[in-house]
Amino acid sequence: MEHISPYRPIVLDIGTGDGRFVLTVAREHPAKFYIGIDANTKPLEKPAMRATRKPAKGGLPNAMFVQAAVENLPEELDGIANEINVQFPWGSLLVAVAGGDAQILRSIGRIAANGCLLKIIIGIDPERDRAELERLGITEFTPESVRSSLVPKYASAGFECVEVRAVGRDEWAEIKTSWAQKLKVGKGRTVFSMVFRAV
Image 1 (cartoon, one colour):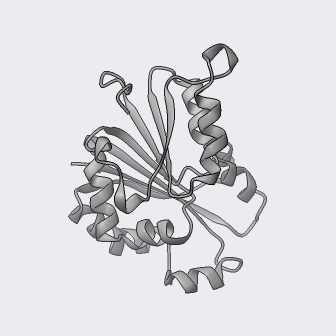
Image 2 (cartoon, helix red, strand yellow; image 1 turned 30 degrees about the vertical axis):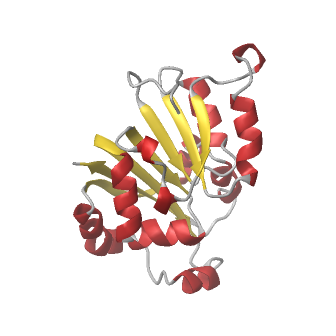
């Protein structure tokens, strides 16, 4: 990671999956450096290869991908992130951010620079996702429940709440991930945006 410039804003995407978000925004914002992180190696292979091509062949010198679990992020990332994104998490990552897992929030806080924005987008369909939500132990997720139960947990980890809101369907086109495009066809799904600032 020695080629990361300390003089440009650094944006991390945790649970990056197929890397679509990183590849898209890195091309749109060459003055920033983007790092996609995922615990699963397989989906990272293709975007990593694309990013390392020569710029003339579509490569992106301002993007890279790292295989790592959120609870064990590389020490090289400590304190470097100016923005951290967690978009449409599922499984253990959803449990961590929707439940305010103290260990995970400390791990995320460790890589955040002062003033870093932590942007979390969660999409839930109470009916279609019922069985999985019950399995994960998530009984309720609304702006009200976030403010009452989650915000204090994030505050304990060093993140102050900036906003908690439902995302309008007309805004989904601005969310540049593969999951955003797949999920927007469903009518019962509600998407929530949570934004915190590292203090």
